[in-house]
Image (cartoon, rainbow, N blue to C red):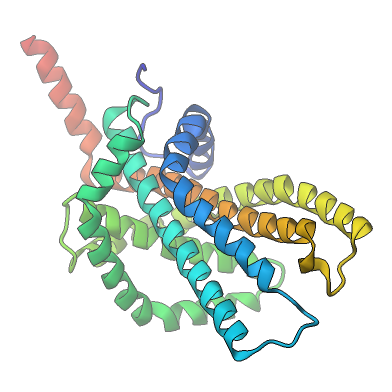
Length: 305
């Protein structure tokens, strides 16, 4: 495969973030989803199996025994933990995908290479995740206060809350990338990420939120319409009575609905990483000027050649 026509390291204005995200996604979308879903297919199948098992335990009219409550509770907990694990892996896989894409500037890599790179850096992911939990607790109060205060702003309150969460997510992402790529150690990466982003943090957060908002809307439209049609057919066929989960059709519909939710989470994480990655490269370029040094080195190599 030839090189992709995309410039990662350059300064961007607000509108250019959105446009560049769309342009990059047009180039990589098939390869991105194919590579990542090959790695996630087994845990996704486990979600389907556990979800279907839960539907077999849903007997609304029946009296539950303590054993039934325990089985359902254990299954629900297992499903939640599995979905969280899938989300974390999807996030990590997409980060490694972005790094490979940026470094190679080509789609000439596969799931095996991505898995090898992820596995070699898994300790960094675990260490950062633990540090992020601690930092998350420390910033929870000011973030929650900011969200609550923004909620009282007429009309734009919900948008302001979304931008706040986008800024926090971008900050954590940038901190990890600075740590993952060896710019700073675990103790310094959070403060350094803030220094890297602070001058344009609102612009970066707004750009990230706009991208997320657009694709959340598109994904919702794509999934809600067929789900509404399926549930309407189900209602006309068997109704939503207490015997709904006793039918094979009812169990299948409930399992399918749960699977759609899981897939939406995965796709959302994947798209978030790509948008964060573009912003990260822009902020890093403004701070370190890596592209300038790359071009100087390339010119020097051409002259020597």
